Image (cartoon, rainbow over all chains, first blue to last red; front, side):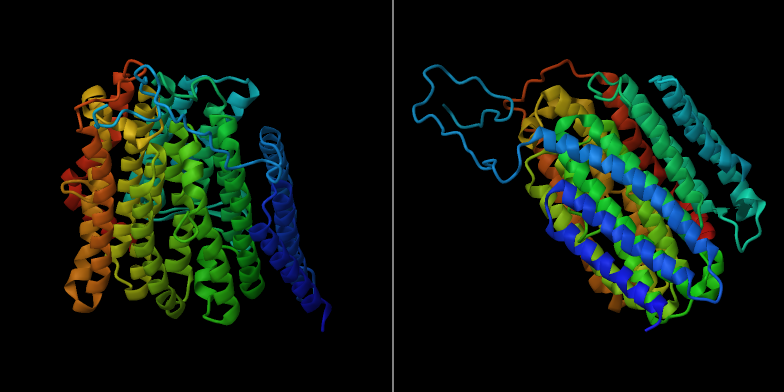
Length: 125
Length: 474
């Protein structure tokens, strides 16, 4: 197996691993890491392809550099957003997602005021 | 070409200046959109008269250069983008309920305009990757303007969008490894139907379909578009999802080898029909106003996908026209629908569809705008949506073997009518109307009406429009 093929396979493997992570994992930070692993896979494929001829292909290397710039800025933005999301909500495991307030069994003594989210139906009181 | 470059540079420079001076002056944004619209119209006029124009950025020759291409379609999309931005900027500045008046909406919307313009003009696989990333990042930043409740949807959109970009980038890397060029016009002459090309095309298409929220990769769209501020939702639904669609169209109709395209066509068309039915069904069931409109975007993109798929399968030239008519008609109608929905939601003080009860009495203009835009989505004549559907159905009716697809279009129409009339019927239930929390804002409501009137007026110039588009999309 030539080195180019080897690195191509490793790159593709990283990409698939990252994709698997992105689809399976829920935690924001892990998803961002999964995207970065996918990105590294793509860059590795590109660098391997750059060496496929006798001379190194500068275009692909330039693409990798551009891709890295994009990846760094996108990751920075994603991390900031993830921090904002995580600071809003308690960790998803400890939270009780389906807490439903018990409905009052007795009807309200006064006529209930129509609330915003449940306008009065046409049924007579 | 210079005019097209001005149309691209104006919003970009405005965005940078607004950020530099930390200004939130909407006047500058509206002015930039207006001037951009004028120069895009000039560019369109030039390119229709003189034919396709190419620009070699930096003056390099074609092997190294990144090229810009101005075709009549890209000129039309430039003008359309500027027009929508102008309309939405006026709404965002003047509506009492706009959450974006004193926010970072202004530089971001200019950046969005600039990245879209760059996308329409690019004709290079890697340059498209960069513009797609710009578009995704700006779109996510604009969704977060709605505040903490939108962060979750925004983060989900961001991660999926970044993942989709990496699908696309891997496809680009394979394409370059196989042919050694990134320029689409050079690629067209080299491309062959072999396994690496097939893999690359599939990877790029999956990435683009996820970004354009084409069925079955649309799950992120309703949450993201519904949680954004109203002005942003309108821009996202009308323009941002069309960017990846444009690339998908160019890739499959020009770059892909004929036999590969003919194989992919029925799959795309089938996905289009399923998008129409599944998106429409979800819109029929959802309890929230803006989610309904967002699901309607998922459904309507199905028409574009159907037109693209059938176009690839049978190589019928009219379907190019149908595709772009759908994009224009849907863009205008969706701006109108989102602005009307956002305005009603803010004035009535509830996000639920139920609260629209009696809205024809309390907010007649906004409700009328919603219904008129919905009429175009259904395809009632005389509207832009009808025009697009007419052009799509005509070649389908000619041959009996095409009829099953025409049945799919009919099914989509039926579902669309169902969710539009769900809202309209509720709005005419005037027995106990939901009382508004605030005074309805007539100016904002009329502004929501304007694009709906524009889409209906497309029918007035239907014949020249179809003939012209047939001429330029060949």
